[in-house]
Length: 89
Image (cartoon, rainbow, N blue to C red; front, side, top):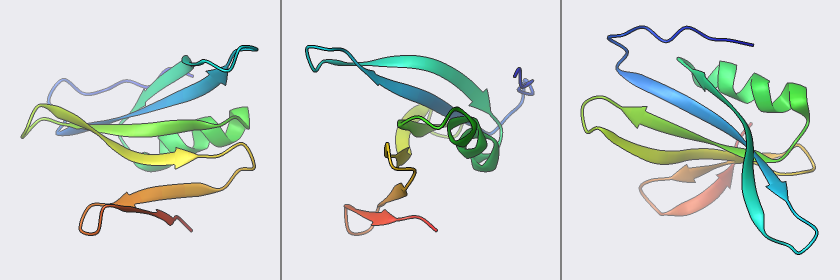
């Protein structure tokens, strides 16, 4: 699925599939850019694979981790105030 990102987008979500080789090393698989977290989450849920979602913000020009999807389908998000991972409903 191709998502058009507006040229003046304030933030972009990157959903990336996590693949694990037989020797245990991890690498990135398929990726999608989205304008909303909902689209990024649906991308990984449709693939039914573990992965992560990061967000790029134009104000800081930095990319930060936003949420991760485990192999069992559960989602966790990083609480920036406490620095801990919490379940995402």
